[in-house]
Structure formats: C-alpha cells, structure tokens
Length: 217
View 1 (cartoon, rainbow, N blue to C red):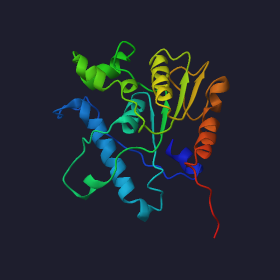
View 2: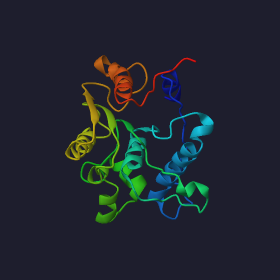
View 3: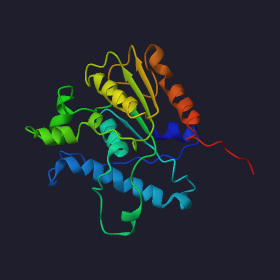
C-alpha cells in the first residue's frame, strides 16, 4: 500500500501499532490510538524536514485498521501526551481512506474486533465511545470509503452507518460499495468492478487537492 501511495507522489509512513490484545496494556482500547496519534505528531513535526505539507496528512486503514483510521479523523481526545515537544503538535488526520472498515461496536460490530478492542463484556458507555458512527462532527475530515456488498466478515453496514453520519454533518465523502471483493479488497486481483477502487481513490485525492501537482524547477 505504501508503494502505491509513493507511485502517486505521496510520502507514506507505515505505522506498526500495538494491538489491544498485547498482555502488558493497562487500558487495552487506548493503545492503537495512542500509537497512531504519536505517529501523526512525529510526521507533522518533521514536515518541513521531510518536505511534506503539514496540512495534508491523511490516514488509511483496512478492516480493524479502518476503525483506527476513523478514530484518527473523529477523536479530539488526546491520549498520547508524553510531556515533550510533540504534545503541542496536532494529531488529527486531514483526510481518511477506509477500506472494508470496522466502524461500529454496537449490534453491527465485527465480533472479533469488538472483543479484541473492548474485552468480552464491555459497558454500554465503552461501546458507544468506540462506535465511530456516533462521533462524527463538523471537524471530521473528508473521507473515501471502499467496501464490498458480499463482505461476510465485517458487515458492510458499518461503512453505510459511517457514511450516513458523515452526510448528516456535511462532511465531503466518496463512498463506493462494489458487488464483489468480500473482505479481501487489495491492490490487485480484485474481482470485476472492484478493481476500479484505486483509480477512484486517486481521482478523489486529486479532486480534493490532497495530491499537489509537481512543479518543475
């Protein structure tokens, strides 16, 4: 995926974040977001050095990674404070690209993702807090969503719920549900029209001006 972004002229950073099932965590549900926020802060703090636009740093996630990416667009809660210079750097994503994302922790949740993130018997308060369709605000950034109608792993209604929430808050969104692809939409060998998701995503990035034209010197 990073190489695909590189081919479009986008600098890409791959974040290896802690999973909520790691045995040393005190609050399992915080770890992925802590690592993602810290990574965003590191990238934005080095934007000048790495010659990237600090106001056009997005996040991409698939499946459970899509839930984390959605949190990076939705969450205003700072869970990554370490009392150093990065604490003052914004951690929110400027756009989101979600592929077959986990979104809800409610009745439409992917059971494995819900159990891994929140434990076996989470409170209703925790379920609501981590159901991303409930936390879209006017500050949520633009979003691209690709999903498959025949996804039997993560119910596609997750994407629909998120799109509806984005629509209600007037957040610009490009939403695509393809007939095929299951829970395996990738960079190549996608069935039928699903293969078009990459071209649609690239066109959206250009239309939204997240990809800047290369100026020759």
